[in-house]
Length: 414
Image (cartoon, rainbow, N blue to C red; front, side, top):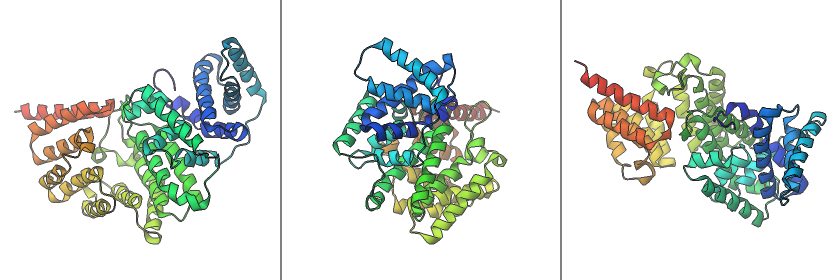
């Protein structure tokens, strides 16, 4: 990642991480030490490449430097380390990329989702080892100090080592048990890319692309699993709106106000086909229901033509199948569109004391929107401002404050 926070320049480098890490682990074992070495190589690249130029073979460069870092981890001879890294740059110009393994990223994904780890540790380790995020980036995503996240990741790698896990896909008999966790981590990875929890940018296209790529790989090895197909469909259908989700200045554009001509119709068609097939041939699951809801939004020619009645029915089914405050928040908006804003506010009140959402900006922004629909502009404006104070995302904060300012201006108008 560059010092000014630009992600796109390093997106293709991040995609090399699973391949490089996979080669090292197969050669040397010790996933934990190999993962540290790859992270050090990425740091070295971020420092050297802007000055010395990008090598002809970035993958070979990273592999060589990481291997040397691995060999020299306990040495303190800085001069020798710098000399070895310069040699690595020269070597990378003449060496070809190591033979790729299509399953390396998938193998790493299952390894990071080892049952010995907590869900938070699984997600954090996946973001670092598979997606190539730095510890600092992951810490910002989880709103914790970098030192705290570094400890979590270190403990996660230690637990994997103590469990005797190997760098191989789990046998078919164990995949189904671990598959649910894998899907949850991919969903988290996608969501962090589609709505970054903090920072100056709303979108992280590198993360959404990586989540979709890995979901495709999981779908490839378990093509008959309806929830795998449902998650892939959900990602495609939501990501299809990305071109219209922000304005030219990076401001957030709500779904109802987006220019739908900018949506990716190819991705929408693929997502609709996936969810349609899975709904008719496999057991129904939460990801399939969410994908079906996304498809209804994407297939509506305009916001006013959205089939909200069908969306309400799907949310009610989803709430019975996978209850949770986030589902209730989304259902409240749908209920308001069908039965009026008070119906949405009444439903929202049922989760107001749930600490998982009561202090989150999402709850406040939904409540503000429903209050605005109900015509209570003063209370809606205050709710928007309160929600703005609760988010660490700069684009979302600006959007919420702009909504509040617009309501205040309308109240002052003669």
